Length: 171
Image (tube, rainbow, N blue to C red; front, side, top):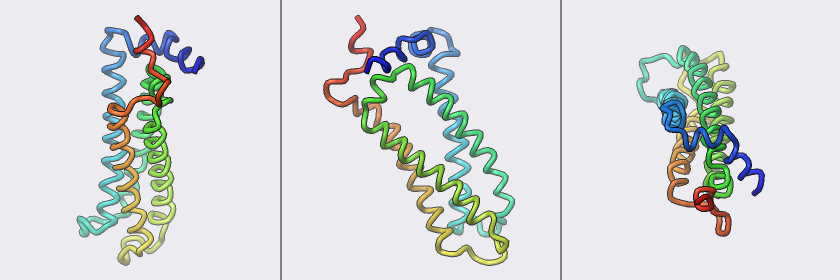
């Protein structure tokens, strides 16, 4: 717990959490939201196409969206780390945070599997997608919905009992 408190009390943690600068918490949270939109939005478009929506659109050119997905992922990783540092003792003692991270991990692994197993298939766009590809699309949607839901629930479920966040200890 001391390390988490140290992180929060660091110059960076204090700046993100307490600065009146527009470049601190508001911009970091905005970047996290935009990154999420690019990451999950493009994933959802690919998943829905894999499930048969917009059948006239070829799937192969959608592989270019993976660079957008990775850009969104790295924006979220950086902004999420900054948001975490600002509130480490609350977030890292909240079980819902770990549920969120598990869903994010599963979704990213799933994203890699889609690229390797679906977009590397030489028969892509010449025949309907096989069942396993559709399972990957459905699980992708499920994992991203789980990550987003858990992320929102973190605001309503606090840290485990006996581990109050820093804001409850500083006068």
